[in-house]
Length: 160
Image (cartoon, rainbow, N blue to C red; front, top):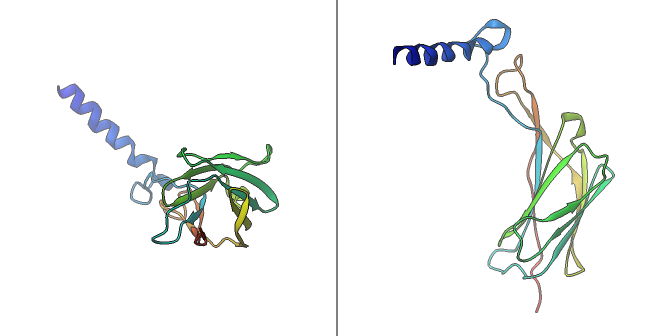
């Protein structure tokens, strides 16, 4: 039992020593990611159509095609094979969220987004991302991450 306590205590002493410049008070071991997200949601009080929603998302000239089926939680996406940016997309009852992440130099500056429901274009937006830089362990410790402010767009109400 004492040997186990000794092992646990010595393990805890090793963790702070991984700090920046040998100063255990200077850094923690918190991580972060370079991320951005775009959410396209239904108007408040309106049902999301039980239909296929398709997105064409252009990030700095690279185009991603995203298809969200009514009965699926995750959306299929297809992008340039050489892209160093990764993407996750999902659909809920409120709308769809497109999240992208990657190396700092792969994060996009500009976007163009088009959305179609059952082939009818219902949304077109374009602009630039606003990034904030964070260093959760302090500026001298790393990692340093850039996160784009989340974008939120509302689908227009569908007429019957």
